[in-house]
Length: 447
Image (cartoon, rainbow, N blue to C red; front, side, top):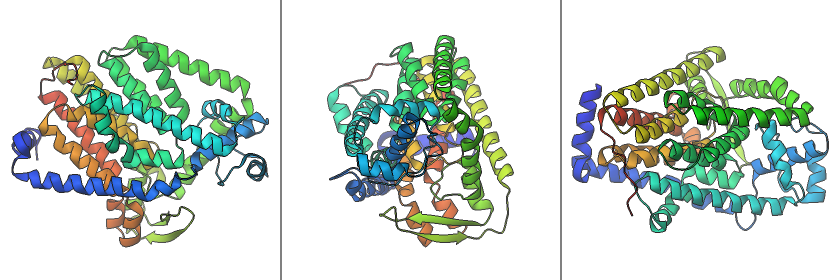
């Protein structure tokens, strides 16, 4: 279906009360709610009465290794057992994939016992979520604490958010960084805040470094310069303070993780590389159930055997194509005299989405970054709210990936487990379509 005909179709379906297909949108919304709310309820025992954050444990143990003068990526033998005895480390983690600055900053947790650190981390994560919810409400066109409070059940139980809370992941920092930067592009907030949070996001996950590609085309030179200077200063300082950790990470550990993720693909990996490999070659998968320690194996047999190099190249080519599409959409929006600031914010969120596609081992907890794009499209009117409902439904279905892996064989298994990837593409298309076909007004959120 071509662009103009699709636009007419969306308008016919969605205007007013969502047109003749309003029942379909209700069904999709219910499916999404069941997937997101339901799995959140099932995962509550991972938080209460005692948090058991596996990924926080990896930051904690890595910070202790760094503090003791050892490598946080190749732990000394007996470190986990020692921390279990002396600091109450209640889970058995693996070294974190976060870069050295994040592990270095995590040393602030080492004076605390692990149970205390886990509770404080959970409270900090909830505070970041509350802040994010307030910003999301504003982006969605609503203001005031009542609107943010009404949105809390949706954001709190959103599948990717709840994964962060149960695992102790750091993606809520990345979410705040995306929101603060996007709000700055729309004329709200401060440059130091946008630059500073972006640096923290890169320290946490690396892939947000790709967001910088948007700023030259949006003519945000001061933001770009400030952010890159801060980033260079932080990474250089940590490299000087912790040369062994820096060398181990960039020279050995990171490349090893990339090879490992290519050799053993997870059904939960939502990167394009993983999606291509799951569909294009035979894979032996391990997946867990409600108890992360109990799992099963399954083999998805494919008639094709695509190489890792070809899949990786294809993933990056798609990302670059989407980035070019964002630039063209921006130029088209300017020609049409659309609201530059608001369109720029939306296209930035589209690039944030695109940054989730090319990097290997992009698990579902990273897809908290769907929320800014969902809020931005929601504010664009009924036509685009249907895409938000579709994305919400896809995230809910993606929370059931291990069920799909148990029930389905190739090719349905690889197709069914890519919900978050599809949500990225749906929302990215919606933002680009809105930017080039509609005049986007610049208005303050309404109460």
